[in-house]
Image 1 (cartoon, rainbow, N blue to C red):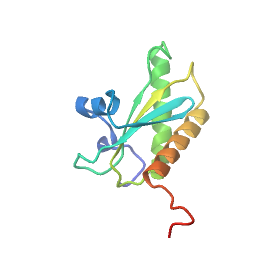
Image 2: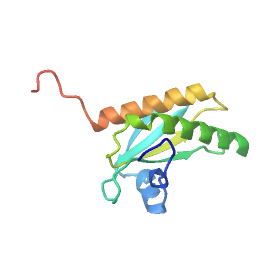
Image 3: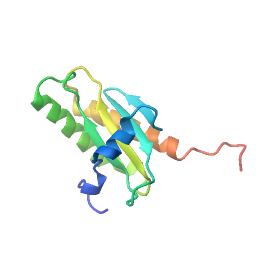
Length: 133
């Protein structure tokens, strides 16, 4: 993929893919970095090998629709600018869920998304220990 835009194939959509990510008992991992929590899993059953993501801002956290849209846009922009932290050929599905209690500035959202993507990448590609060669 060239350019900085978000492509359709990067969007996590479809009931079965989302259910597989959130159903109880499904193999998934969770990463927390306030004000976002990420639920992710490796999904190698699809044809295209690129990371896919979705963003969820619950109405319980932000009552006004304009505030929910603003936080989704902030997260999407932070992901778009830092998606190079995850390898482009991995089969990971990520869901960002907002857990903050009110609007947070873009700098907090960006810091949180970068921390989440770094943690996911470190779990996908574990560093070899010094004694293992």
